[in-house]
Length: 182
Image 1 (tube, helix red, strand yellow):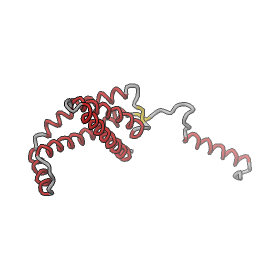
Image 2 (cartoon, helix red, strand yellow; image 1 turned 180 degrees about the horizontal axis):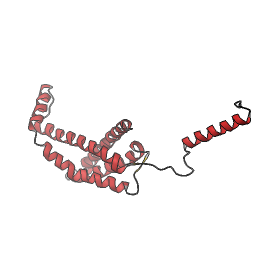
Image 3 (cartoon, rainbow, N blue to C red; image 1 turned 180 degrees about the vertical axis):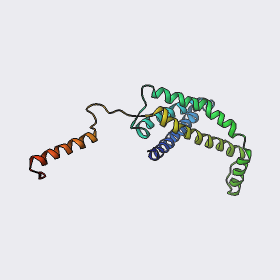
């Protein structure tokens, strides 16, 4: 079922984004305020690790990422961080009419935002939403694609238990001359 997965995916995504922002703020604020790209890289890698752990244990806990799941996860996330997001930023930088419209709304609401803030935030928000949608489909189909196989002796097959129970009840009824046992 996709709807509960989308809700779990969104919850994990928000958690990972908050974690990413906190790590970025700490690293950039206290250690690397002059070299922000390193702070971004550290927070991005930390967030990707947390995302894999949370998605594999919450969003897709019934799925098996397989032998190369971790490699596929980080390869895909590297592709989105290095190729997709910069490409989206290039495209989303162009519709200045949209950012001017949002800026006018901000001015009407008396919010102290300038054009660069509105444009940069708009580019970030739209690109994050596009990447999040892409990630959901890639994670769902390619990375966490197959249901986990049951381990022998660990999980009981409920269908088999139900059928076995029905057979035992039939035997009891036939041994008691058609009466059900108490």
